[in-house]
Length: 540
Image 1 (tube, rainbow, N blue to C red):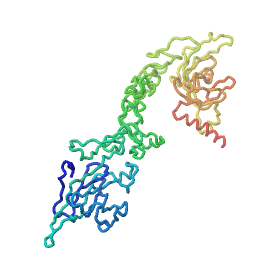
Image 2: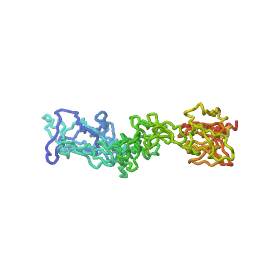
Image 3: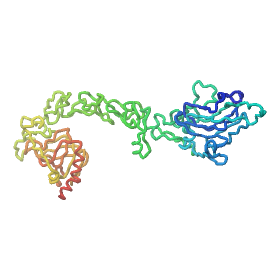
Image 4: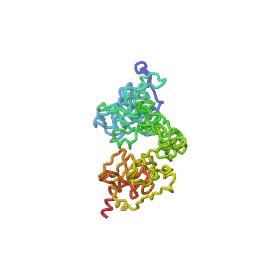
């Protein structure tokens, strides 16, 4: 049945003698697209038979065509010779010719008009895994003449078929032009190969999915009507991943433009697109993002660094590579004490007891007799003795102890901290400005102090212009209290709310000001109070 019809025309398949019902079944072992079937009978063609298909390896069967000499009597169906589109035909059921009679079935015929061969409608009709021919009723050759007094011989008490030709193609969803040969297959003219050689960045035996790194959009079959290939789109993984998957939440949130999420990012990268460095690494801008060396390991000093990653390495800023230091520690790699600190250790560095700086190893203060000094903020300054108004600044006298830190001698420098309960109390103070600022240094001007701060955020401002830069604020004179109040420690960030002197264009801070060590969530809280809380309080 499957040998060459031209080289071996005299071979055939034959059923057992006297069999009335017979079945011929072809199992393809994969999904194929059927185009047509041709049968050449050695015996007279059957008076009734059925051609069936299965799409699920023989679990369910559906009829392609009924064949009968009388469709109505045999199957209760109309004949397609008179009713176009009927499932039954008498066209190929005549006993004549007695041998080499043909039966032809075309899966796509004028009754099945399909514009796109890869559409769901076409797949339902053409895609099969099995084909079955049910031979239901034999018939004898009408040319046999037998004398009346003799018993009629049973010349064709069997079914016999010279050729059964099934034509089709491998099923590739419009993403391949040919298929691979089955291994160790001989006589390839008689074989429908089932493994597609996929194009358009697709993969699978039938090109039914996108290739591993091409899942940025949903897979689609080719368009057989327009010829559009509907290629799979490559994910943006910057050459740091070998595969990706389509995340429909990402796909929908992008407006159906991109939904690929990279898998198993390499070269110390992470993110949906392997677009950022993992904790413990930072972006080396001397290398392109697609380079395996795009992310460089942080070079943080283990003693002075503050943040560890879950895998035990030190964390640094992902863009600059600067490490996160312990209190009092400085440098890109947290390997030295900040100015004004000493004693590099596992706990960080300790503040100097000097007005400006000290030996970073011993903490010893340098000798100095300057009158304009950087002083410890929040601490006691030199006691100023009463000086005659007509005496110059150089004639002032100072006591032996040259200033001390409130952090070291809290019992000598006590500032009562301002606290506010309800929002109404905060609003009643009518602060002229609210800022986030880092304390840099302070300077003794004799009768007052000037504190240099770096303004990080401006939450509220009044008549005095405030910019995100270094500015001076003016605390309550320490000649009255002996300490700068409220306490402002160097190197720390504070939320500062205070008043202003419009005539001198100065920002003031005193015991009525609100000074709190900065917390990450305070910017939003302060803005909420300023923008809405105080307005509601005023209405009440």
